[in-house]
Amino acid sequence: MNLFNQHPKELQQKSSLFGLSHTDSLLVYALVYLIFLIVIKAKVKWHPFIALLLASVILGILAGMDIPDVADAVQTGVGNTLD
Picture (tube, rainbow, N blue to C red):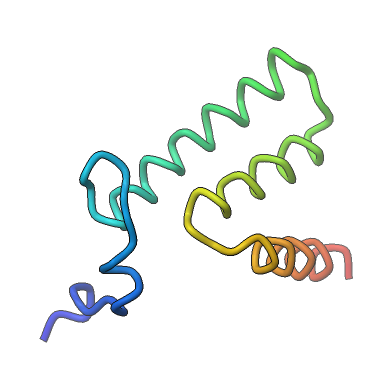
């Protein structure tokens, strides 16, 4: 039995980018995230913390998370890091 092919129904039913699977769409979003992060840091010269925070929120929304869930994930991640 292959564990990687067992996805919850909500992941199977989500719309994806250009007809890709949800997993493939997440890989594309991660690549876009890295490019966005490099551009915002190098060209716009924003502080790294602000650039990481903004890029992480955008990636969470693109990945299909609800906005309150994104806020909770960011709060938990930053809180655990600073704790």
